[in-house]
Image (cartoon, rainbow, N blue to C red):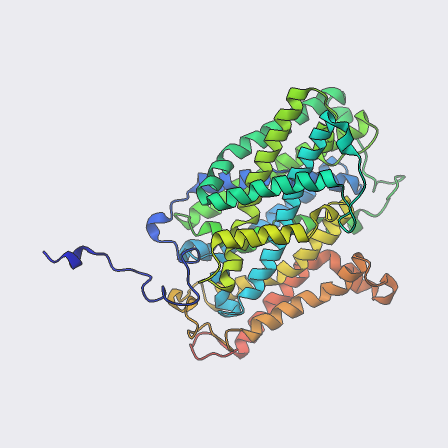
Length: 502
């Protein structure tokens, strides 16, 4: 018997030597595509049950909504974002490819770095936010035992105290250690994380129910938009940007979902798993956030939209320590899964032969510090209107381009080998698709004036009111314009033949 006959051919032999290839970006072989409905549902339960979800709901209450208005807004936002989530997941499941490789078909082999890096930098911001939340939880709970930690002078530039910064960096170092350990450690964290934070949320809900006198008083707070209230008649003015912000919350994962769906056994598994896991969990944890925040208004005569602030009102040492451990583990698991897997792959796409998953994760961590995430969470308005809607204006156009290219232009057919070839059919113009770049720019531009007004870089009077108002629809506007422009561009310059240059 010839020994060579028993050696299986390498299906990646044609692309393994390419400078666009590394093992982290390689197509997942069929035998490793084992995720089923339960795995995807568990993934979304683990990622959705987190402190930012709680704060997301609470921030709507702080903005003037009553409890059912806030829950409805969040639920609608998640139903809407579920559509591009499932559509973009299709390519990952069909071809086993991660997000940056998926982008090469529409943006070009080098142009794919544009959406990949934009998604990566947003993930860096979220990584920083989650790390700040974990570090802040440690700091606030330790301050109960050591009150002197609650004071201190603010550091120049940073705007936080030395003890806050030390706790932040301590939790950051734990995140970096998990990244170094690799994907198996991440999976283990996700398994134990969801029950911890859901249990903690339900305990908070029980405490709020008892101390606020039941759900009646707790959920009877009127909407500030009702007649006679402080913001009477302004509901729609707040609702539309609020809905856009809710879509922006998971607009990140709606793009890079191929990083996870590449492990799916079938399309049915990813579709059903995501449908069951995302909207229901977000609604449940949003309700906990809304109910407890409403209760704090009754119990403490002030609105506490950060659950850590609520927990620090408890003085039992055992409760505080248990809460700190649960929050840290839960936040750590969500942070790594939602905010490291994607940017690590995205940064690796810059130079696949030099940047590994671990190095990409380290880059994510460093950029997350430099973005000073505590400023993004300064108040509910900046959280929704500056952060969530702001990056939604960038990611919406990318989603429109990807879906237009994959489903309309290519009819779900990709040349896997060419995705890893510098000189293949996805080279376009020196590696860049001018059509995709133009569609992206035109999709972003209408929201730019409103964003600059929102972050107070230009006066509102200098911009037409219609453009300022358009910012509240940023994700929708960007998605629609980019989708239409891209399809028009491809009608002029088809991509079906390898010689296409635009």
